[in-house]
Length: 103
Image 1 (tube, rainbow, N blue to C red):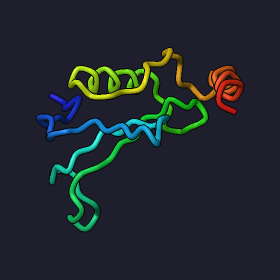
Image 2: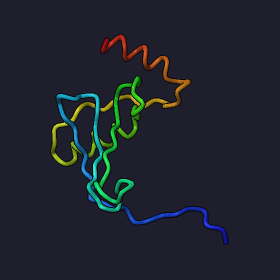
Image 3: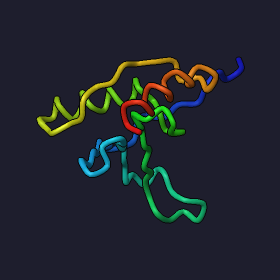
């Protein structure tokens, strides 16, 4: 029977980070040694989710998940945002709306 996917248990732990001085980004971070650079050094990775539709990291649903996780942990967090289709051909309106609000 052909393999349809490959899976490992979720490594971790993961942390959710938000810095008020960088209000448009939330980070999902791990230092787990499962993930290393090409030389087998520098463990972990850092994923950024943005609320800015101009960003390649724009992901409203993941942004909101991270916001809720911060709040559930009793931490300061930014506001949730409206969730929209992330397809590049659908972003024009969201970028125009963002630009009106944020310049």
